[in-house]
Length: 267
Picture 1 (cartoon, one colour):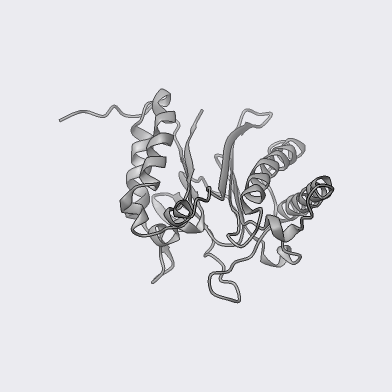
Picture 2 (cartoon, rainbow, N blue to C red; picture 1 turned 30 degrees about the vertical axis):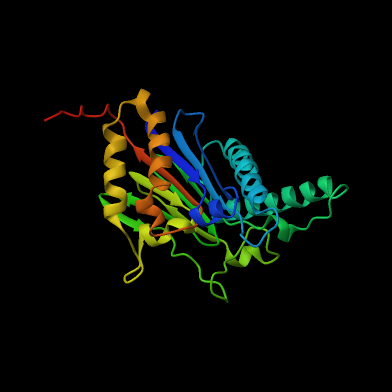
Protein backbone atom coordinates (compact mmCIF):
# COMPACT_ATOMS: atom_id res chain seq x y z
CA UNK A 1 0.00 0.00 0.00
CA UNK A 2 1.07 3.58 -0.60
CA UNK A 3 -0.34 4.74 2.74
CA UNK A 4 1.69 4.07 5.88
CA UNK A 5 -0.36 4.50 9.06
CA UNK A 6 0.53 4.39 12.75
CA UNK A 7 -1.93 5.11 15.57
CA UNK A 8 -2.47 4.70 19.30
CA UNK A 9 -4.80 5.73 22.14
CA UNK A 10 -3.49 5.79 25.72
CA UNK A 11 -5.03 6.64 29.07
CA UNK A 12 -4.12 9.98 30.66
CA UNK A 13 -2.15 10.01 33.90
CA UNK A 14 -4.97 11.76 35.81
CA UNK A 15 -7.51 9.18 34.62
CA UNK A 16 -5.14 6.35 35.46
CA UNK A 17 -4.68 7.72 38.97
CA UNK A 18 -8.46 7.54 39.45
CA UNK A 19 -8.59 4.00 38.13
CA UNK A 20 -10.35 5.07 34.92
CA UNK A 21 -9.74 3.63 31.45
CA UNK A 22 -8.98 5.56 28.27
CA UNK A 23 -12.05 7.27 26.83
CA UNK A 24 -10.46 7.96 23.44
CA UNK A 25 -10.85 5.77 20.38
CA UNK A 26 -9.49 5.72 16.83
CA UNK A 27 -9.64 3.66 13.62
CA UNK A 28 -7.74 3.72 10.34
CA UNK A 29 -8.07 1.69 7.16
CA UNK A 30 -7.41 1.89 3.43
CA UNK A 31 -10.31 1.52 0.99
CA UNK A 32 -9.65 0.69 -2.67
CA UNK A 33 -11.86 2.38 -5.25
CA UNK A 34 -13.01 0.43 -8.34
CA UNK A 35 -10.13 2.01 -10.30
CA UNK A 36 -7.64 0.80 -7.69
CA UNK A 37 -7.08 4.20 -6.06
CA UNK A 38 -6.28 3.99 -2.36
CA UNK A 39 -8.36 6.07 0.03
CA UNK A 40 -7.15 6.46 3.60
CA UNK A 41 -10.10 6.50 6.03
CA UNK A 42 -9.41 7.46 9.64
CA UNK A 43 -11.43 8.68 12.63
CA UNK A 44 -10.63 9.90 16.14
CA UNK A 45 -13.16 10.32 18.95
CA UNK A 46 -12.84 11.53 22.54
CA UNK A 47 -15.55 10.55 25.01
CA UNK A 48 -16.63 13.43 27.23
CA UNK A 49 -15.23 13.20 30.74
CA UNK A 50 -18.59 14.32 32.10
CA UNK A 51 -20.47 11.62 30.17
CA UNK A 52 -21.31 8.41 32.02
CA UNK A 53 -20.67 6.31 28.89
CA UNK A 54 -18.16 8.54 27.08
CA UNK A 55 -15.80 5.65 26.38
CA UNK A 56 -18.58 3.62 24.79
CA UNK A 57 -19.67 6.69 22.82
CA UNK A 58 -16.18 7.19 21.37
CA UNK A 59 -15.89 3.53 20.44
CA UNK A 60 -19.34 3.53 18.83
CA UNK A 61 -18.56 6.72 16.90
CA UNK A 62 -15.36 5.24 15.45
CA UNK A 63 -16.69 1.78 14.71
CA UNK A 64 -19.98 2.88 13.17
CA UNK A 65 -18.45 6.00 11.63
CA UNK A 66 -15.95 3.86 9.75
CA UNK A 67 -18.72 1.55 8.56
CA UNK A 68 -20.89 4.44 7.32
CA UNK A 69 -17.94 6.14 5.65
CA UNK A 70 -16.93 2.99 3.78
CA UNK A 71 -20.51 2.33 2.70
CA UNK A 72 -20.75 5.91 1.44
CA UNK A 73 -17.50 5.58 -0.52
CA UNK A 74 -18.81 2.39 -2.10
CA UNK A 75 -21.94 4.26 -3.19
CA UNK A 76 -19.92 7.18 -4.56
CA UNK A 77 -17.53 4.77 -6.32
CA UNK A 78 -14.50 6.69 -5.15
CA UNK A 79 -15.75 10.26 -5.63
CA UNK A 80 -14.49 12.48 -2.85
CA UNK A 81 -16.97 13.36 -0.12
CA UNK A 82 -18.78 16.68 -0.42
CA UNK A 83 -20.07 18.71 2.52
CA UNK A 84 -23.53 17.36 1.77
CA UNK A 85 -22.20 13.80 1.94
CA UNK A 86 -20.52 14.46 5.29
CA UNK A 87 -23.67 16.09 6.67
CA UNK A 88 -25.65 12.97 5.74
CA UNK A 89 -23.00 10.75 7.38
CA UNK A 90 -23.34 12.70 10.64
CA UNK A 91 -27.13 12.45 10.49
CA UNK A 92 -26.83 8.70 9.94
CA UNK A 93 -24.48 8.38 12.91
CA UNK A 94 -26.94 10.27 15.13
CA UNK A 95 -29.60 7.73 14.12
CA UNK A 96 -27.18 4.89 14.95
CA UNK A 97 -26.71 6.34 18.44
CA UNK A 98 -30.45 6.78 18.92
CA UNK A 99 -31.13 3.18 17.86
CA UNK A 100 -28.36 1.94 20.16
CA UNK A 101 -29.93 3.77 23.08
CA UNK A 102 -33.29 2.16 22.36
CA UNK A 103 -31.64 -1.26 22.28
CA UNK A 104 -29.97 -0.89 25.70
CA UNK A 105 -32.55 1.26 27.49
CA UNK A 106 -34.62 -1.76 28.44
CA UNK A 107 -32.03 -2.73 31.04
CA UNK A 108 -30.49 0.66 31.91
CA UNK A 109 -31.96 4.14 31.41
CA UNK A 110 -29.59 6.05 29.09
CA UNK A 111 -29.64 9.22 26.99
CA UNK A 112 -27.65 10.66 24.11
CA UNK A 113 -25.80 12.86 26.59
CA UNK A 114 -24.45 9.74 28.32
CA UNK A 115 -22.58 8.88 25.09
CA UNK A 116 -21.24 12.39 24.39
CA UNK A 117 -18.08 12.37 22.26
CA UNK A 118 -16.18 14.44 19.74
CA UNK A 119 -15.45 13.19 16.21
CA UNK A 120 -12.70 13.98 13.72
CA UNK A 121 -12.51 12.31 10.32
CA UNK A 122 -10.45 12.22 7.14
CA UNK A 123 -10.88 10.53 3.77
CA UNK A 124 -7.73 11.05 1.71
CA UNK A 125 -7.04 9.94 -1.86
CA UNK A 126 -3.92 10.70 -3.92
CA UNK A 127 -5.39 13.81 -5.54
CA UNK A 128 -8.20 15.08 -3.28
CA UNK A 129 -9.30 14.79 0.34
CA UNK A 130 -12.20 15.55 2.67
CA UNK A 131 -12.01 16.37 6.38
CA UNK A 132 -14.56 17.01 9.10
CA UNK A 133 -14.51 17.83 12.80
CA UNK A 134 -17.00 18.12 15.66
CA UNK A 135 -15.54 19.44 18.91
CA UNK A 136 -11.92 19.82 19.97
CA UNK A 137 -8.82 17.90 18.97
CA UNK A 138 -7.14 18.57 15.65
CA UNK A 139 -6.25 17.56 12.11
CA UNK A 140 -2.89 18.59 10.68
CA UNK A 141 -1.67 17.93 7.14
CA UNK A 142 1.38 18.57 5.01
CA UNK A 143 1.24 19.66 1.36
CA UNK A 144 4.42 20.44 -0.57
CA UNK A 145 6.34 20.45 2.69
CA UNK A 146 4.04 22.93 4.47
CA UNK A 147 2.44 21.64 7.69
CA UNK A 148 -0.79 23.32 8.84
CA UNK A 149 -4.02 22.64 10.77
CA UNK A 150 -7.14 21.97 8.71
CA UNK A 151 -9.39 23.55 11.36
CA UNK A 152 -8.63 25.40 14.56
CA UNK A 153 -10.20 23.66 17.61
CA UNK A 154 -13.56 25.24 18.32
CA UNK A 155 -13.96 27.00 21.66
CA UNK A 156 -17.28 26.34 23.36
CA UNK A 157 -19.27 28.84 25.40
CA UNK A 158 -17.61 27.79 28.68
CA UNK A 159 -14.00 26.90 29.49
CA UNK A 160 -13.03 23.21 29.30
CA UNK A 161 -16.15 22.41 27.29
CA UNK A 162 -16.60 21.52 23.65
CA UNK A 163 -19.24 20.35 21.21
CA UNK A 164 -20.25 16.73 20.69
CA UNK A 165 -21.59 14.40 18.04
CA UNK A 166 -24.58 13.70 20.29
CA UNK A 167 -25.62 17.38 20.63
CA UNK A 168 -29.02 18.30 19.23
CA UNK A 169 -27.43 21.16 17.26
CA UNK A 170 -24.43 19.15 16.06
CA UNK A 171 -24.75 20.29 12.45
CA UNK A 172 -24.20 23.90 13.56
CA UNK A 173 -20.77 22.85 14.83
CA UNK A 174 -19.78 20.54 11.98
CA UNK A 175 -16.68 21.80 10.18
CA UNK A 176 -15.91 20.44 6.70
CA UNK A 177 -13.08 21.03 4.25
CA UNK A 178 -12.03 19.64 0.88
CA UNK A 179 -8.53 19.78 -0.63
CA UNK A 180 -7.92 19.13 -4.31
CA UNK A 181 -4.15 18.72 -4.04
CA UNK A 182 -2.13 15.79 -2.73
CA UNK A 183 -1.77 15.36 1.02
CA UNK A 184 1.70 14.01 1.78
CA UNK A 185 1.44 13.68 5.56
CA UNK A 186 -1.53 13.65 7.91
CA UNK A 187 -2.24 13.54 11.63
CA UNK A 188 -5.42 13.41 13.70
CA UNK A 189 -5.27 13.81 17.47
CA UNK A 190 -7.53 14.23 20.48
CA UNK A 191 -7.52 17.35 22.65
CA UNK A 192 -5.10 15.76 25.13
CA UNK A 193 -2.31 16.51 22.63
CA UNK A 194 -3.33 19.99 21.51
CA UNK A 195 -0.73 21.77 23.67
CA UNK A 196 2.04 19.64 22.16
CA UNK A 197 0.93 19.71 18.54
CA UNK A 198 -0.40 23.25 18.02
CA UNK A 199 1.16 26.70 18.39
CA UNK A 200 -1.55 28.92 19.86
CA UNK A 201 0.29 32.20 19.31
CA UNK A 202 -0.08 32.01 15.53
CA UNK A 203 -2.55 29.12 15.10
CA UNK A 204 -0.04 26.86 13.38
CA UNK A 205 1.13 23.26 13.66
CA UNK A 206 4.18 22.54 15.83
CA UNK A 207 6.42 20.99 13.18
CA UNK A 208 9.14 19.74 15.61
CA UNK A 209 6.53 17.43 17.14
CA UNK A 210 5.50 15.84 13.86
CA UNK A 211 8.55 15.90 11.58
CA UNK A 212 10.66 13.26 13.39
CA UNK A 213 7.74 10.83 13.51
CA UNK A 214 6.83 11.29 9.84
CA UNK A 215 10.50 10.81 8.93
CA UNK A 216 10.73 7.61 10.97
CA UNK A 217 7.63 6.22 9.29
CA UNK A 218 9.12 6.82 5.85
CA UNK A 219 12.39 5.12 6.78
CA UNK A 220 10.81 2.08 8.45
CA UNK A 221 10.39 -1.12 6.46
CA UNK A 222 6.77 -2.14 5.79
CA UNK A 223 6.97 -5.28 7.92
CA UNK A 224 8.20 -3.26 10.90
CA UNK A 225 5.35 -0.72 10.90
CA UNK A 226 3.25 -2.62 13.52
CA UNK A 227 6.14 -2.18 15.95
CA UNK A 228 5.80 1.61 15.54
CA UNK A 229 2.28 1.38 16.99
CA UNK A 230 3.76 -0.04 20.18
CA UNK A 231 6.50 2.57 20.24
CA UNK A 232 3.93 5.33 19.76
CA UNK A 233 1.93 4.05 22.75
CA UNK A 234 5.08 4.06 24.88
CA UNK A 235 5.90 7.62 23.78
CA UNK A 236 2.38 8.91 24.51
CA UNK A 237 2.54 7.34 27.99
CA UNK A 238 6.02 8.68 28.76
CA UNK A 239 6.87 11.10 31.56
CA UNK A 240 8.02 13.57 28.92
CA UNK A 241 4.50 13.75 27.48
CA UNK A 242 2.66 13.41 30.81
CA UNK A 243 4.51 16.47 32.10
CA UNK A 244 2.64 18.48 29.47
CA UNK A 245 -0.78 16.80 29.62
CA UNK A 246 -2.58 14.46 32.01
CA UNK A 247 -5.52 13.79 29.68
CA UNK A 248 -6.19 10.76 27.48
CA UNK A 249 -4.18 10.97 24.25
CA UNK A 250 -4.86 9.68 20.75
CA UNK A 251 -2.57 10.19 17.78
CA UNK A 252 -2.97 8.99 14.19
CA UNK A 253 -0.04 9.50 11.80
CA UNK A 254 -0.10 8.75 8.06
CA UNK A 255 2.33 9.33 5.21
CA UNK A 256 1.89 8.88 1.48
CA UNK A 257 4.79 6.96 0.02
CA UNK A 258 4.95 5.71 -3.55
CA UNK A 259 8.40 4.19 -3.34
CA UNK A 260 10.34 1.93 -1.02
CA UNK A 261 11.93 3.63 2.01
CA UNK A 262 15.55 4.64 1.87
CA UNK A 263 17.67 2.35 4.06
CA UNK A 264 18.82 3.79 7.35
CA UNK A 265 22.63 3.71 7.39
CA UNK A 266 24.19 3.22 10.81
CA UNK A 267 27.16 5.48 11.57
